Image (cartoon, rainbow, N blue to C red; front, side, top):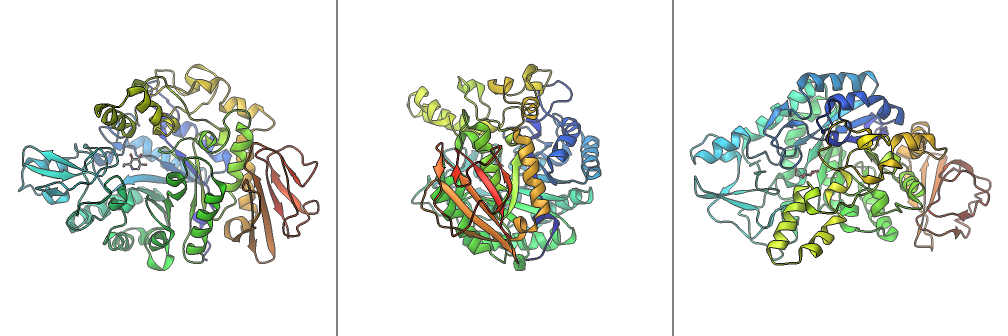
Length: 535
Ligand code: NOJ
C-alpha cells in the first residue's frame, strides 16, 4: 500500500479540559496544551487529537456544539487556538480537530430557530416526526423528544440537548463542508469525526425488535454517499488525516469507510474490542485483530487503541493496576505499537494512569452515567446497586486530571479542578515516572523510536503464530526480508515458553522488552513483552 505520513505516525489524544490548567479556573485549557507541547513532542507523537473545544453549553463536555466557528471560553479563544496550531507545527507535529457532524447543541442558533416554527428556514436541518418509534438513544430511554411549541418530536441519538442533524438536506451538508474547510484553511491537519457511523438514518424509522441494541443507529443506507461527497468536496483538496468514530461496525462494513479506492476516510475507530470485551480476553482479541487485518489487507488502514475519553484506563480494565501496573502498561503498549494500524495514546496512558472510584454519584460528571443512574433508580432499583454497576465503566474513569506531579491537584491546576483528581496522584504522576529507571513514558518513547526506525513495524505483513497458551500472544510482521517477532505474556504468572515455530530466541536480536534483563529467553515473567528482530 502507498506510504504516507499518517500511516507512520503515532497520535496523542489531548482531552484538554483535564490536561493542564494554565489560569487556575479548574479547567484545562488550550494555553495549558501549548505549555505542555514539549512533553508531547518528547514522547515522539506526530499528531495531536484535540477533543472538541468549540462554543458549547457543555452538557456532554463539548460534544454539544453551539457554534462551530468559535472557541469555548473555558478552553481559551481563537487566538490561542491559532497559536496552538502554529506551536504544534513549529515542533514538527500536526493537529487534528475533533468535529461533531451528527448533531449540534440544542442551543445552536439553527436549532433555536428550527424549533420556533415549522416554517423555520432551519426546520429541515433537524429530524421531526409526529410520532416517536421505540428506539433508545445512547443516553436516554427514547431517541425522541417532544417539542411543545410545534408539537412534534425531534430525534436525538445522544442527550436530549443534542438534536441530530438531517444529512439528507443538501444545504445542511454544504454548511458542514464550509465549516470543515474553514478549519483546514486555518491549518489543522485533519479530523477525528465524531459518531460518523450515525450520519444516515433508517428510512421511516421502523420500530426495532430489540430496542436495547442500538446498532439501528449506525451504518444506514446513504452514509457512504455522504462520506464520498464530503471527501470530494473537502478532504481530497488537502493533505490531511481523517479518522471516523464508527461504533457497531464489522470488518466488512469498516472496509467501506477505509478502502482507499472508495475515497471516503483514511481510518476509523471500530469498537469491537472496547464494546465486546469488558475484561481482557486474548483469544477474542486475536480473532478481532485477525479479522480486521485480513479484511482490510492491501485496501485500507486500521487504528490501534485500548482506551480514550469514553473508555476506562487500559491498565485498570485489561491489565493490572496494582503490583504489575508498569509491566502491564508496557505490555499493552508494546502490542498497540507493533500491531498493524495507527497507534493512539490517550493522555496519561504513557505514565500508566489508572481508573478511579469516587464515593458518590455526585462526584461524577459523565452525562451518560448520570442519566443511566437516574433512569434505573427511577425504575425502583436500589441506588447502591445501580451505582456499583456503573462505576467501573463510567467515562469519568479516564477523564480525571492529568497527573503531572505530587503537588496540589496533581500539578494540574492551582484552582479547584472541575472533576476530582485520582487520589493515587501522589505516587502515579509524570515526575515520579520520569525518576524511575523503568519509566513507562520512556518505554513509550523507545517504542515510538522503533516504529520510526523499522518500516516493517508500520508496513509489514502481519501473521499470528498459533500458540497453545491462551495468555500468550505471538505474532510477526514481515516486509521483504525483514521480520520482527512480538511475544507478550498477558498474565500475572511466569510462563515457560515451548519452542515457537523453530525460532531460536537466544539468537534473535532483542529490540525492546519491558523487563530490565532477559536471563532466560524462553521464560516470560508476568506481563513480559519483547520485540525481536529476525532478519
Ligand atoms: C462520541 C464521543 O467520543 C463522546 O464523548 C460523545 O459523548 C458522543 N460521541 C456524542 O457526541
